[in-house]
Image (cartoon, rainbow, N blue to C red; front, side, top):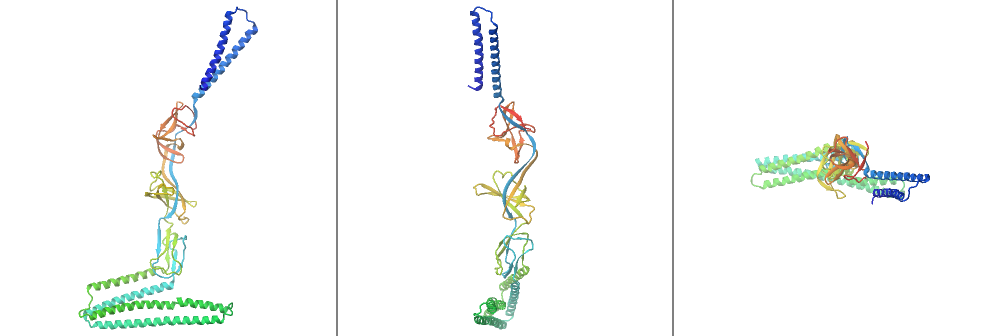
Length: 503
């Protein structure tokens, strides 16, 4: 039995009791002979009737209030549908990376004089990254010029030989004698250079020996200035024996002449073969074309080397503003031609790489504007790329990569750091909107709760974009309509409610 039924039953009992009391009194009056009622008894009866009537009124009032309270239902708040500007953003983070990088390779095999940057340094366009050793660069230039001269001389000699053989085989002997003389002269010159090297080495060795003897004479005074100076001279002498510039220059010249001698000998061998043949020793068209091609190729290689030397006489310079991310050369080293030296990543063209979940793929698009925050500083950005293939992140979730190009980068940007990104995916101005928390979803779609005639009712809606606070309603609601604000209440259709408007 409900509380209301119990109260009704209790009220009925009271009424029955009063009725029974009045009936019993009437029966007694019929059975007993009528007598005049005394005043005291009459007052007592009247008082009892008044008290009984008051009790009946109180009980009925309580019953009525209980029934009214049950019919009133739970109290809910409503708010009007409004017109808002709704902006949908994607807040995420990503890694700052450069869109342009350049790796510098050694254009020539020349000793490095000074490396002027280190990994992590910020550089500006035109800034010097590396300087070659001036003497080594000059020697490399001279060597290339000599090779070029030798190549040209070889070609001229070959053409001359061919022309001679066309007119007369006897002229081969003249060419052979010339070649033999060239070989002999060159070999003699090489011997002279080798003798200079040997003499220089012997002189340095002799000087080293004398210094060692002098050092022994002063060994009993190891703290004296003379002893210390002798040690320094010995160290310098040892270095000179290994790195004397004259010796190195003569050795390089020997290498050049030995290469020329090899060429002369090869040419002489050809002449001998040509001489031994009983008939014409002129080159055919194929041989002549090959000679010309080889000569042009060698000339081109030498010229390229000379051009490369000319380009780096003032050092290797940065092509754009950026950050040095790799340095793979040290001062004093002689890199091979084509060896990797540096890598620079541009700070003029910078992007932020982010990942997007499947829930945001239909909202993000190339061309959308973005706000990027790097180390507390804000930059303007734009979505420039969305990958067409998903990858798996550390949590095992499939995500799609995207790139945000920073439109106003400066030298304060740090590559490789994390950046906060807010992509402005969509915006709707002056649209019907409701707070996100009033929108519910079931298997049939989105809906809100409204109150009609004191009862809860579902109202189906079609939603558009959403911000952190509002969601656009494209169908189902109009401005000014009241929707129920659900604050943890379990609502269902048909539930009685009492509405308290909030706005």
